[in-house]
Length: 83
Image 1 (cartoon, rainbow, N blue to C red):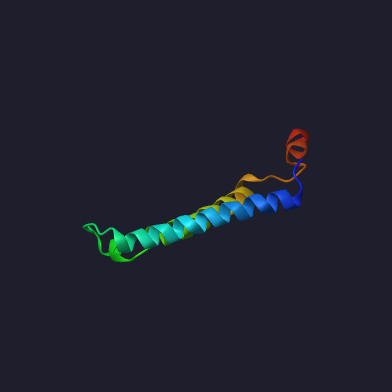
Image 2: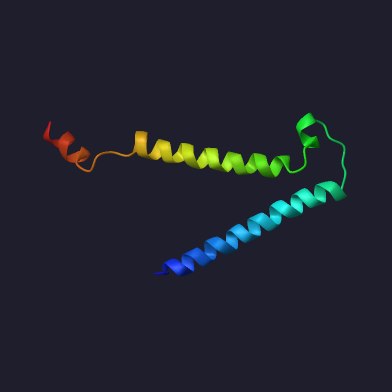
């Protein structure tokens, strides 16, 4: 079993690589120009920001779905068998 410091170290590493990828995407956007098909493609770092907020929305929605809709009370099956 991993200790909390090991888990924190892994999380820190993942965050560092994520921020490096984000900075690289924004920097390369200024260096490499391509023809934009949509207005929002003109915004530097749009897809990185869009992906980040999509991740937040998806994780919050899945947490809501799990806790509010899918999760049952601990005695749910016992109560159903008594009927």
